[in-house]
Length: 364
Ligand SMILES: Nc1ncnc2c1ncn2[C@@H]1O[C@H](COP(=O)(O)OP(=O)(O)OP(=O)(O)O)[C@@H](O)[C@H]1O
Ligand SMILES: [Mg+2]
Image 1: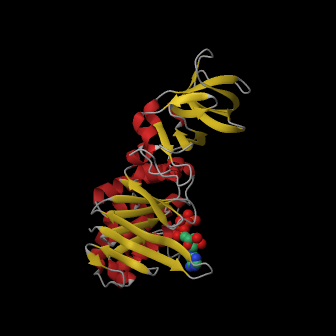
Image 2: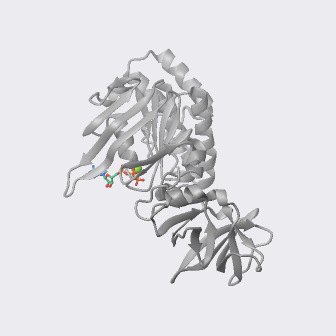
Image 3: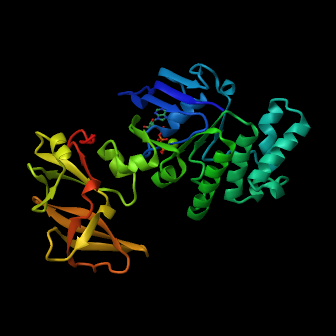
């Protein structure tokens, strides 16, 4: 087992202009931690993982595993095992042979390989498939074989790049719980890449959010949700997404559809000198209020009934434009399409303010 650190590590692909696929990434992953790298397509997740695996050059900075600088160490010398999106199982080998192959190459005695493969198969519920070839397995079983192949090597770090993307939605949810439980049990430092923020939030001890090769924030799922460092993280983490609107600000508060939403002294101070802010509020922190109360006028354009609650999408006039808001309401009493409702902030402590240009969070 080992800790991992990226020390201002960059990967720059040549081109005009050059692509800084990973840009001065600094990140410390502790021993035994499950860290998820998340971000939109092209944000540099796979590149960052491949740099750690030694499959991609580190053009600037360094990478350490277990306190040792491995920047120039070839993949074989890094004591890591990687699980890819395409499981890359050998079709002509049985499950047992696939799982034990790396050990065989290393010259581990047959009886020892057999014992390790059987132990991993037990953990992954693969015992009865050991003599089958991969083509006779379901997608979920193949995924487990790929995991098993990594486990038998007993590496100090697991690297996983979207290992669940070939599974259907239901199996993905089950498998992600299994992987998280297995990681907990083995206690092996794991770096896991996904573009799915729900997967990231449910699996990671901490989640690192990347955008355009730049680390935006790395923190626990709770902290990312409650205190996003910038408007990008605020909009990326959480489903449905946070409502983020650029609105005028006065000495009392933020102006939404003629309604002044009062802001704390600290928030007003942080926004000092700005005429506009990016105002963020999650759908569950908004609510529909009786028509006599103060609130923004919203015309309901879509109601998504989810059972326990419903998501109400609608248009609110802000200045000269019409802006879309999403409000989470009780599933038993949703408004109807086309209805005019009053929407108000239910919980003022859940207002997030960001700089209208840089997107940085305004209060500490
Ligand atoms: N070999 C390469 N040559 C040039 N550019 C590359 C190369 N590999 C990746 N890139 C670029 O680097 C950036 C990051 O790519 P990367 O594959 O790391 O993204 P990703 O976050 O894993 O995306 P996805 O979610 O789609 O897998 C992209 O802009 C990509 O086009
Ligand atoms: Mg990728």
